[in-house]
Image (cartoon, rainbow, N blue to C red; front, side):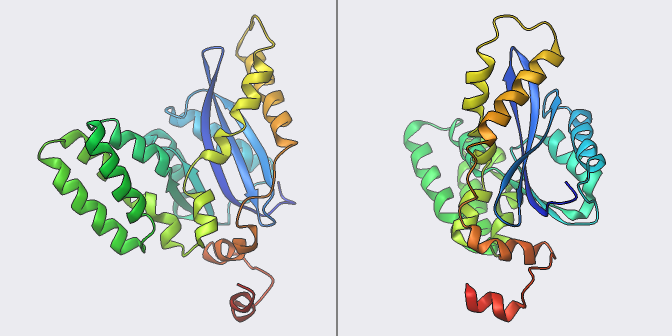
Amino acid sequence: FDDKDILAIYMDGIIVDKRHILAAIGVDSDGGKHLLGLASGSSENAEVVKDLLNGLIERGLPTGRDYLFVIDGSKALRAAIETVFGKRAQVQRCRTHKMRNVTDRLPKEVASQVSAVLKAAYKLPEKEGLAKLKTQAAWLKTEYPDAAASLLEGLEETFTVNRLGLSPALMRCLCTTNIIENPNGAVRRVTRRVTRYRDADMAMRWTATGFLEAEKTFRKISGVDDLWILATALLRSTGKSVDQDLKSA
């Protein structure tokens, strides 16, 4: 990967033949999406995550750069990223997972109201959005303490794209793990061809085949023209001055 300027890395898991497989997809500075790697094991296992990340480094992913990682709420996944990349990792928690985790703990009529509050808060600047959702959590705590706790867990990292000052188009793509979940359909179509898996290696090979098939249809990320904002936030050179960037925005 030393010939690609990877800005964002999506990480998520898929189950093939009852086996957990962790995948990583990267977005480069031109908006292209690339399958970076796979590892056999769950995102809930920090050692599996570290093995995948260290494998990417061995294959040329520079360690001296900042990256935006887009992940679900797995604590092991978050911890492994922290161990390998430290302060160079900007982590965005998936908002779709956050909403689901909160609303699944609520009655239907309350869930729809809370969902609307979350969507509105995520459109606000980081400070105002966080304040709005902490107020919502305080309201929930009396009757729905589990939902309140779920809302507050890792809440600040659901606002990372706001803190980085990204455009609305970029935020929509970089605030959820949808980009890495979308190829799962292709993976399942390919892996269904196998009637019996002999071992974990076989499941990995067929999963890789599915992702590579999906990669052929990858389009550039939405908001590609605004990627200079993410590059600047990650302290990368955009090849233009800030003034030029602002004029072209």
